[in-house]
Image (cartoon, rainbow, N blue to C red; front, top):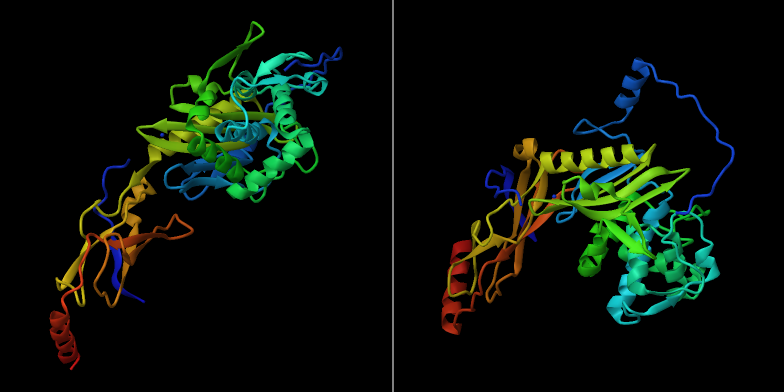
Length: 406
């Protein structure tokens, strides 16, 4: 059982902080744009101010997370279900990468393009019925140019049918922790019950980076050429010099424009989801602004210096009377101007007895901050091995403990 040792200790020992073939329509409808009144615009912006930092978030859904600590920097309907549109392809690609990693297919494996894939509407990589296309080319067409035809071809190749493949996608996503995700297809085209959340989309993206770092690199390719046709990556953030290296855009009539974005600055990675925006430009501007805000306003800090004792605790039946204790490796993401509002309470075991192995947990530091909904627990561990004392020495130590108790 732990005994409280220190209460409300300000953390002043922080280390440095660690970033389609479109269908033609002969009828063109022109809608008159009505410029909103200034008062209406101000009111709309006020409704989009997200607390506690006062940041304006124009997206209907937004979630910004530090990749290393999983700390949420901003959250606007992050757990509310939405239509993921082409962001679905993050999971489609993950399934293909997993098959490649497991050796079930090879990059040079040939896929025969079906009529289903060729007739798929929306963005495509210009596949034709009967084409023999490598998995390597299809996954690039899927990721870089968001090819719906590539999504169908890959789903049929790996799952037999798109429905079976979508069921497999859902099952793997659930195992990742994507509890609110249900896939009905591999492309992300609107379909009843085809839903995910901003949080689940980040989980999928993070797992792609962690599980298949080599294949994750495809997300930062700025263009892809197939059949002599070069198409640019729809993720324009790749060209904005903000450290973006992924992940995937999406658009459908109901959810509007959205994307999952990831960027690295000074060795620190953030994942962002935005959705419900009105145009590609607004999507790009919103994502760029929120990523830059996250990098500028938050840092990653260590509470206690690494590999340095923070306290010595009494030890029974050891060759020494006390044992040094240090904090396990950790990082915390904190708003730079609010670091001094972080507090910690240390708890430790009231009786320590040798022998002990280095790394044995003997206590914990519970860290809180006004901006956090949950505290962070940092294990306190023994810094080195401690041997048990000899039999005769233990007899003397036992008598000493009895006399000390009186």
